[in-house]
Figure 1 (spheres, rainbow, N blue to C red):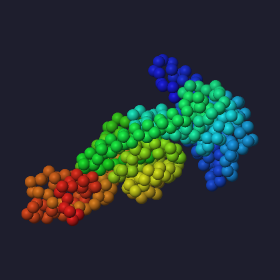
Figure 2 (figure 1 turned 90 degrees about the vertical axis):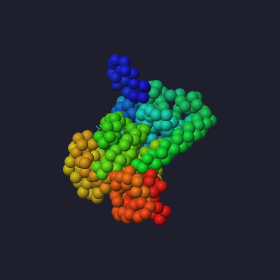
Figure 3 (figure 1 turned 135 degrees about the vertical axis):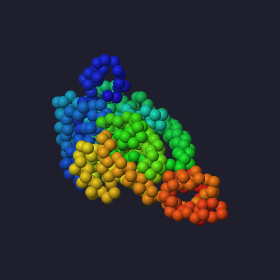
Figure 4 (figure 1 turned 180 degrees about the vertical axis):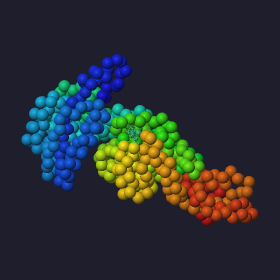
Length: 434
Ligand SMILES: Nc1nc2c(ncn2[C@@H]2O[C@H](COP(=O)(O)OP(=O)(O)OP(=O)(O)O)[C@@H](O)[C@H]2O)c(=O)[nH]1
Ligand SMILES: [Mg+2]
């Protein structure tokens, strides 16, 4: 639930009896099938469960285009109202995106809060944000969602529980609480704060670049096992949960690959189909760990529904944050659960590997492949190393691959395949010609 969890005895039971009751609605538009809509609603139910509410009904409709007023047709809207009465629902949630006016009209007609998928995802993010930056990013996304939904003279809210998803996102109550101007100035302040935090992070990451370590970022659909993989490899102790969006803030750990070269491995926020654009926008700086990485490890849950669809959804978000240019290794996780599916996916995707982050199966192969791939993206550079700098020679051997050496008066002329990060760290030895 959204109300802060209180460890007092019996709290769980009370919480359960107070869970918000929700009816979900899915509309099939041209170019989609009913089973797409079903799959979308299944995932929406998972999201709602993660947010702490219960789905008590589901309706679907096929349409050529959304109805201007209610998104669904009038008859369907009336059917929805009857179902809500029957199951005593607090809130309806559309899997499709509602325009502010549609949301408002639905609320008036149904006498209950009407929300869309975006609101549910924002709600989960709001519950899971812990760091200063994470909280600021979520608040910014929330305010951007609420601003166009503020209304003057909206009808008073119905029996709404404090702290429910509906309480936070319904279009009614807000008009009295906060006016547009205050929200706008708060948005500007958050944007400024986030810019400062971003600048600081940039300074830090520059420092990392100098440390000469390649940056590898773990990306993937939510609940794919990204944090489990980071923990398995580095004992990072990141929270692992069978729930969506358990991780919002990036965690970085150092990892030594089999060849000996150390890399910085970062676990980050998971993606989901149709991740709200405003959220991606607000989380730009967090997501930058993907676009500025040297390499991406894309973790896919091969035991989940539609692994291919999840890959496509992740790549869509990667495209939005300009991270498709970063080389990627596909890793099919949870092979312990679905070994056959994992094998089939590995066959279909050249160069990919199957692992189980939980049991450790396939991890050695994964590390070897990662190490090879990192080397292959490295460029050959030429360096001149003074004879007394045996330490530098040693790190070239450790971090890269020596192509040739030539002894001359000033030192050893070395041609070596090095990552951009290593090249940067050794820049004082790199000869101008390379
Ligand atoms: N059976 C099995 N379960 C796994 C494996 N890897 C992860 N899990 C489980 O999958 C669930 C999600 O794992 P996480 O590591 O939290 O996933 P995540 O990708 O970090 O998820 P978010 O941070 O929520 O996006 C947990 O219940 C894990 O125990 C695996 O290899 N096999
Ligand atoms: Mg995680």
